[in-house]
Length: 359
Image (cartoon, rainbow, N blue to C red):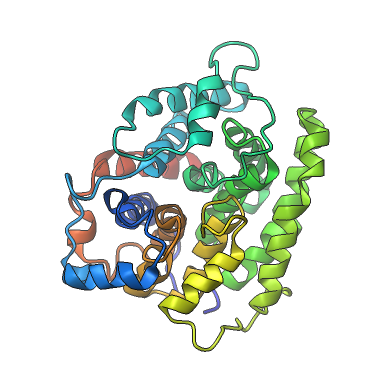
């Protein structure tokens, strides 16, 4: 699919992006049952036993949002204040600290817990934590889509990258981790711009990553360690674009044949650093993009690929569904999937504020 036949972005698209990100999270998580299930075919069998996607009513107590949405809301609500620069970073740090009090049964990652425990919002440099060679996970990526809603225009790329890097580093001070935040934010900005999906990966490599590298050097914080570990993220993305025939940003997409549930589990595992698909900063947005490229405007197909696979399924779905909502709204999404979602009001209200700030 090359781009989409979407109408120009509206406030309703923003609301759908934020809302469906929460839906993807809640479904991919399934109260911990699916996020930690490493078999896509087994998840699809359980889905069938529930009566399929159309019959799922996403509401408490069975379908809570996970740590992904709680932290995404923290980022989004900080951005919605309209603050900029250091004031914004202290605001984000403060909201991350508060968000960690809302983590019962939401499975927050150890890296997020450690990073947030080191934040000191309100004190000088209190939004920075030490470099962490073990912080390559997807915790920064899964909460950064809203940055692309705040800074959606091509001329705002440097602001998008700066905020994604700085907020990503609050817990994931490692390039594989915080470049995941850049990717998630960039992809939502591209969705708002109605940029052809086939060009998103190349844009990440050629446009955003060099800006991020320059920003890290200019910021002068943990520069040597970051540069030493930089290559993995960009090398793996080059490999993925070659694999899918997207190195020139135009396609057509090259898909394996067959590419069913079991094959996707295998492919997603091959994207990963550790064997847990979607659990790192490079491969959570990569699986999200893979799903978006294949699904087009088909919600069920998107969920099959982004939310119901063996791996970190809530983190891949939270990114993919935010982009999909920005592209297509809630068209074709069963109302039962979103009408009673936990934190729906907060997600939609923040979306409206971000839309106002971006226009």
